[in-house]
Length: 349
Image (cartoon, rainbow, N blue to C red; front, side, top):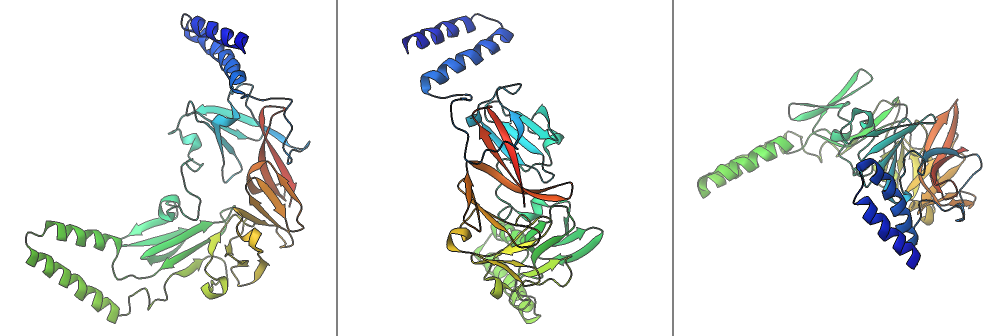
């Protein structure tokens, strides 16, 4: 321990008196010594591989090679086309891996990383659909229009949720046709109240709004009379029975190039067919996956992938469905201490 400390001290002095290029190299050595002192590592070949490791896995990011990054200091994200994005928490640089090639570094505003969702984004079900899918959703007056594969839908007062299948062949949205007050009208009302000079003016503005809402109620333009959120999709003969689904949310990630409904107790397709009833431990999973012929189910939670037959594998992250040469796979990533690299394995699914 004393020897390591002395080496680190000498290196710090040397670095302080050297040029930039030499200091970068010495910084890496110093960091390695510091990691030994702290019990950390940039990759330890003596550490066991995770349970999910496979001899068939592909190397995605070699952290100890060109990148010179620590596993604990990176974030990794998956694009819709299967590309992988790595972000250094230290430098803020981005690297992209696709088809066995790593490119980068890129900065935050580089168009090369525009296809990836920002690391701070929420999951798809919580993110504002109008922001995320602005290539499909446009504003028309006080309402919104959906344009998908050359066909228009709407206008709608609210787009509650919107999802697109993996190959962008299908979409589904929950929309509200009319509301008592649009977002623009609400902002206008607040502004008028703010600018009112007397209490009498505020009362008159409020009365005017109340009369407007009453007129719309009589005309049948309330959320209640239009049935609340309704399903809009290009999938033929589709419907969404909120009672049957017991609530639920639209998801394009459960089945490859399809859109299903996930509720707390079951997975339903958009024709009302229950594909799987979910056991309590499965319903709480972060992700659920179903194969193309609806015969297999896998759930992911806390780094562990569990199949319907109760077999499981742990130590992984970022599972997702992909297709290669016509075959659908359940892919996942894991960190290999032996290779100091991010690996990707694909299971036929």
